[in-house]
Amino acid sequence: MNLARVFDREATVLDLLGGDRDHTILELLKVLEDGGHLNSRHRDEILLALLKRERSSSTGIGRGIALPHIKTDYMDEIRGAIGISREGLDFDSQDGLKVHVVFLFLTPTWAVQQHLQLMSLLGRLIQNAGFLDQLRSAEREHDVHLLLQRAEQFIDPPASDHPAR
Image 1 (tube, rainbow, N blue to C red):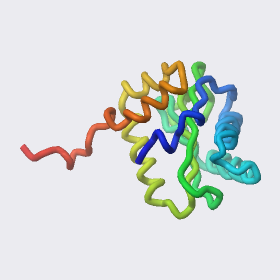
Image 2: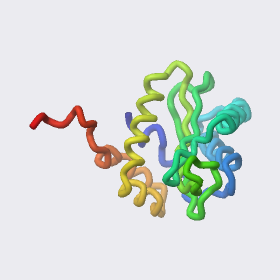
Image 3: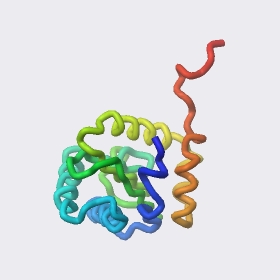
């Protein structure tokens, strides 16, 4: 999966304004809308679905990361936005820490396999402290985009891919 395509450069916010989860989600949806990846007619319905999902179980997964996401009939392909907060956001994270990096993504309802692939890829990627440090310290959208293009360099292959000894 091409992370640089899912999260394109125009869908990057280096200094999130929202001080809380709901405003942050709205801010990232607006970025997707402004970039032509989200039809404005569907933004409010998607926002409500994302907020409902957050209320049932926070996507603040810990280590300063949040992954708000839904599957929806209003998308033709997986698209997402990345937001970075220097001060941190209250996202009701599982570990109680503030969130500094938000990967928001929307998946077509029919794209279950691609959704799982993206979740797996992000899960493995955010385990790499070097990747997270570079992402948090990015100063330009271009830096984030280059990091996403090189993301697979930060992922260790699954144990089953290692040759037998």
